[in-house]
Image (tube, rainbow, N blue to C red):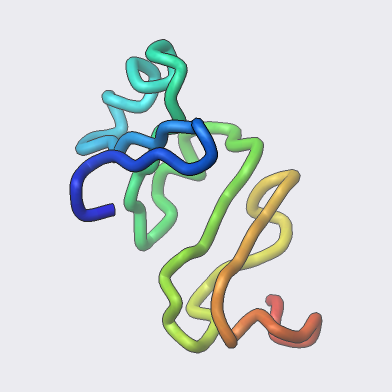
Length: 84
């Protein structure tokens, strides 16, 4: 997300510069996107969905139990055995 926001099929996603921005972005009717490579925020909030979009070509810490809906992108997640 290079421009700080994007629209896909009428849904706007906005990059949250800080975790404090997330609620304000939700209140605007947009999807907040927060970059948190170490998943520190997951210890502070109860996320409904977690998406790993790093495309690191291998699993570097994503787990199915991180949220009720967990989505992982990339070749490291092609098979069930790749999940930790």
